Image (cartoon, rainbow, N blue to C red):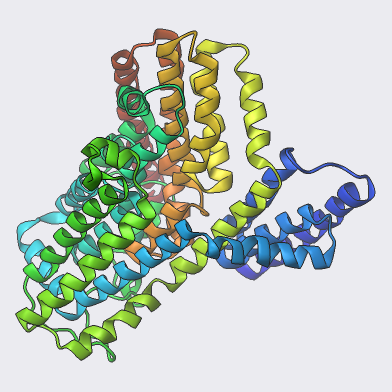
Length: 535
């Protein structure tokens, strides 16, 4: 069945390329700053969802963008794929910093496994956190507490909670969703985070941090996502593809090919005398050191205030500095405790690197795909669409901005890029006319960007949530999509209410009531469906 889908997809793609060549090369159709600029990302996303294979889908998206840019010249296409794509994104200092941070976290996870810290924490948690509901709520709580940065959140929550959720037979797909839903949605409403710093930097002529704080009550997608997680866990609701994986997780066959945290490995024996402290201390070190690293890059030690330092921080450099210092201190701590030898600690470093190779490869392709769409002028095209829609229907502009932000973030896989395009447009539209509507529209932009990022298979946060949970990436995408779309639908209605009333509390109450109502309907429909199947 899968091979048949791949064959059909290949035939359709070839026919598409022939048609595109005819229009672009023969008819001279312009692709820059038009809808054509979004097609490479859309092709990659559709192929990934159909074929369930992410590497080839991303590469074909990159190739499509290069073909459009080079107008189907083979030599120029090849140069554009690698020189302006892969090589260019791997030469970017910010991207390299994120990759180094990923590798260091992989190393720390391996060290925690080797010393038995992960295994000890799993034993401790199994006696103190009772039941599947308790474990999932604990995962949500930890995700909410680690609000500094979404990348840090994804990998830290995954490494800490994976042994506990595995023991309770909670599917890796469900863990991935809980990680992803407490990453960007939490960071986008946390004033002290790299996301707050990014949003503040895109606002010109206004106090960026003040606008960010005022927009939090209107960030309905983030707030309702957190509410939805608590509700589906406490009410034991599963639907869509997630329901299938949750049922499979209760059977031994599901875990047959899974790698367990703290399990024996022929190349890396685990110390079964490790203590919980061997996991807790490195995590605390990571949090403290990464926080210090971020405020250091923002000038905190040169006299800047804590908030200003976060606003001006370089998350990439700060996370690398902080995590590298935490890694060194962790190794010294383990050596002093005598739970690992120096030789074994050094062996963990390349093992940690290898653990992150799939995530690094997907990130590299995702960044390269974004470079292709950037060169085709996708951002400029979307900006022109938004600017045109802002001329009328101002009361409905928040919900329109929300949808456009979802589309752009979904197609490009980046929230921050969406902020950079839409927030300046929103500020220009309302800066001197309606300050309150400007706040609502900015929140709609942020919420839509996070929603699109949440749904997109080429999003770096989605990729790292899969890596943190050690879940097959495409499984995470397909199981998370119905959940994210449910919140998006409720948020859309809530933004209509916000545009009409301009009152956060009224809109939020409407959103909460709708969210609870929708989930109750889903739970009832699911039970009815199960009864029908049994009969």
